[in-house]
Length: 360
Image (cartoon, rainbow, N blue to C red; front, side, top):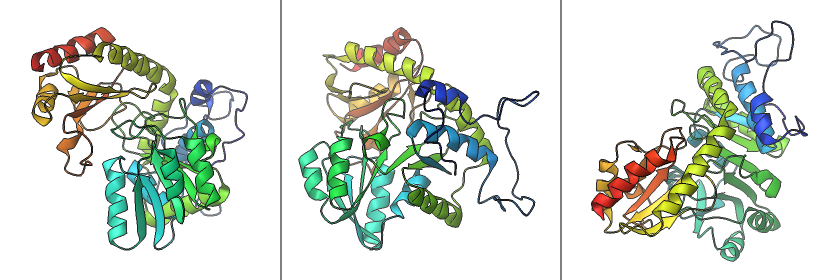
């Protein structure tokens, strides 16, 4: 559980992603922390057992902690990290959350509410005044910005200030933006969560998560939850996620540039009712005219774009989100979420634009 807040403070984030979390410079020293495949440690040290720590996790945590400006705790998945953060809420405590959120998050909140473990108050996260009013009595204000898949934006600083006035913690899922585009801890949040499966690892070959805390107390509580629940990342996954983060800057730059160009070309297309883009990042949501059937046809007609449910990889993917029964009914039936990758943008447009023309 490294403290990375003071590491490489003079370096820009793009450089930190490359240089942090490496072994000390010495003759014949490796450039990378190796994969430590061990469940057992010789007694007398700090780790003691494989469920409590691994050098491969530590290297990953060094980098992400430095990028987000807090203490990073890695987990087996993004959902494991979310679950650990929700465990910070006391029995029956109130959680304020966006009605448009990742379906796994909403499902977990609703499940715990049904069990009586917590209460949930869903809000329109883009309505800052309404969110501030909803903070009364809350223990935790949880949100994404941009939201998944509606791409609504939240005012992190204003919501954090309002939550703290009521004694509530603030946790922000920063998966879509990454710390290169948005650093919630600097804006007042107490906790940040990532599905490292997505942009951080970036190659669609890792399932992993992380939570970053601004305080030692909350970081220690997260480590305790990870150890007790056993939601630990595998050493190989941590190694791969760290390797992916080394190229996060160049991947994100290319994907974001592609997304912005595609938004320009998508604007006003006859097959679309709406194009949603928050102005940054590489996620675009389009609403296809006619609802579910033409949206499904669009996903079936692309060849370069992959019809898949995940996002944040080097390859471009698309998905009609309401094909999942758990998706919120306020999400349009024809909404297709685009995760824009790093392919050449004209190739992406030729495939997507041709598919759109065929259903217009």
